[in-house]
Amino acid sequence: LSTTTSTVMVSQALAFFEKIIEMGLHPDVTTYTTLINGLIRAGHIKPALQVFSHMGDAACEADVIFYTSLLNGLMKAKEVNRALDVLTQMEKNGCTPNTITYTIVISGLLKANEIKKALNILTQMEARGCSLDAIACNSLIDGLLKAKEVDKAFAVLTQMEKRGCSPDTITFNSLIDGLLKLNKVKNALTVFLCMDKMRCTPNVITYNSLIGGLVKRKEIGKALAILLQMERNGCTPNTSTYNTLIDGSMKVKDVNKALAIFVQMEKRGCTPNSITFNSLVDGLLKLNEVQKALTILLLMDKRGYTPNTNTYNSLIDALMKVKKVNKAIAILGQMEKRGCTPDTITYNSLIDGLLKANEVNKAIALLTYMEKRGCIPDHITYTSAALGLIQANEVGKAVILMTQMEKRGVLPD
RNA sequence: CGGAGUCCCCUUGCCGGA
Image (cartoon, rainbow, N blue to C red; front, side):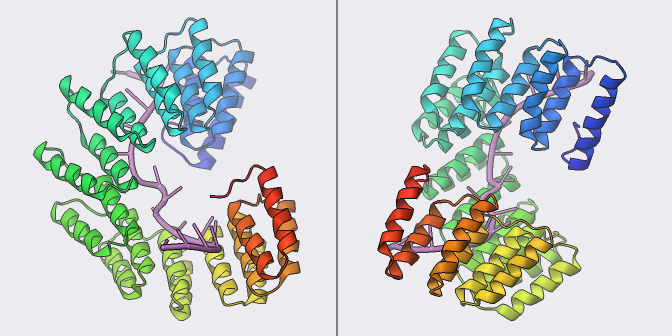
């Protein structure tokens, strides 16, 4: 489990674990901890949390590391309150939280936007003489920036330097990415320049953050300049780097640039993944390059990538945008037949397109149908449906829909 | 050294707005 995220391996590990129990052996805390962490790493958060009760049944006592791992899982599942309960419970059971425990709790709280609670725990941590190590500082800086607490993040940075703990590449990456996401591009670039002065080497993540930030602002030229710089500095771009640039080029309607980047990535021996192909297909369809999109779909197939929900969503949306309702519905059937589950976005595209094609009744029918299939309408579904209804002179129905939306706790953006 | 924590991962798909 500690070396894999593969579903097959995880189920094998679980099967083996059951065998151990069937054999009448009693796994100890360490085994349970390995299990819980393996499951978390593989993204199976729910089963990971079940390990806790399993362990209780087996009368095996949890220790600090186990509780810390459990808290990690709870935070990843955004079960903030349960996590805080566990934090209390562990102390009752004689397990004193350490720096790692507090780091997990605090950064989890920050990611859940529970800033006050996070700062409370931080105070508690310090009051107990539990000091911040480098990782704790990095987590704090990252979490505070993601919670838009720029000043507090920089305060931690100052603190850490004062204590002779110098910021590393991860610290800078958090700062750069956080600032970019807050649209503080200039500050991000300043921080980037600081790295050099502090003899800190940028890595792929640094460059990917920068490129991503620039691309979001449609500054493709600058993003490409960063690509050149990263290559000059001996940092090899990865698939994400190229994917970001391909998508960005498409978003500024530069098909040729997008394709050139695709060619370049292959020449450099960087393997495209399904995101690469989806970005190309989606971009080409949006720019009416249908033939080229089909070519990419064929290439994708030749490389052994099967279309996924995103691929189908791009196709369906493109078809609906040119009002090819029947074709789109045919694709919907095809995707289901191939084991690809339509999601809210699939239905949103269809509903929006149907309304724009004056197929009001079909749109409403689909709205009911999607729920039957377990797809929850979101604010986009409602916005698009209400707008379509208004345009079809069905203002009354639109109002009813918006009321329904609020009742369900779906908030308009 | 049997087990725990930090950075890009919204890098791809849907409405509206700018």
